[in-house]
Length: 374
Image (cartoon, rainbow, N blue to C red; front, top):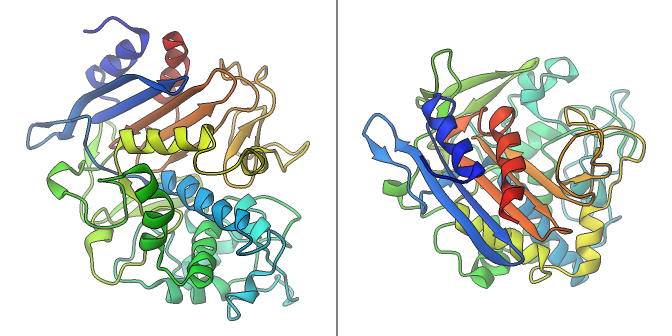
């Protein structure tokens, strides 16, 4: 057993069978101050978790795609309020009464487009009937076909009138590819990966000997995912095909397909916080709340949403040590991250356990104990 509060959290998560394994990395004032791997990368094979273990990042992909989009915005490649049909002329989902709707780049970034996710189980099962992929399953499915299916389903609401977590980042990635002429893996590599010196984070080419085996919550602790695995979430199901990235024809999802390491995601978030990857104005726009008095669904009180990330408006009702202006999100394979610009604190927690690594006791305990490193 180690001595710091964060060590104690990680030790307990493994000893109590909450997680199969985890890597946590923390930076304070631009300097890495903590890095630790615990548990197993592959429990059944007895392979311990390592600090350079590669994880399926799920929605940790979203901020990467978002920051690349803001870079294009800064260069004038597109406008926030431009209709996406300027680049995707066939992507024209209507309202439920058949009325035409105009979706903009701003709507996609802020998840106010009227699109949603199949796993949310809303909209009367329309995404189920259209067999839409959330970007974690259906190996071999092309982006064009998934967008065709997505456009065939009416929007949940008129763009700009409400908020719903959604497939919008995948649509945004399609726009970015049209704008640049690059497919998403090459675009992210050129605009972010090469600038940061990433060696292990990307959509393809991962060293599979260092890839964490995914597990899911079970009644007696984490259970190993098979070739296909479903996890009940509210009214719907998260559908996982863990080897999707390695199967021919599977599209690179801008919302969920990255593979990578804790160190390289920490470097990315530090690049965002320190304005190496986007300007101060862009960071303020990305992290500025767009919800007003409306709460962020399924989030603690005091949290809102910007153009791509959750943002803390009022820390008091959430009983969090994070300062107002902190921003973050998670990932369905078992991850959380946040940046506190006031305290210059960046925390990345990657686990191989769905959903215990993403929400609940562990993520909150990592958050709280990280402040002891200040």
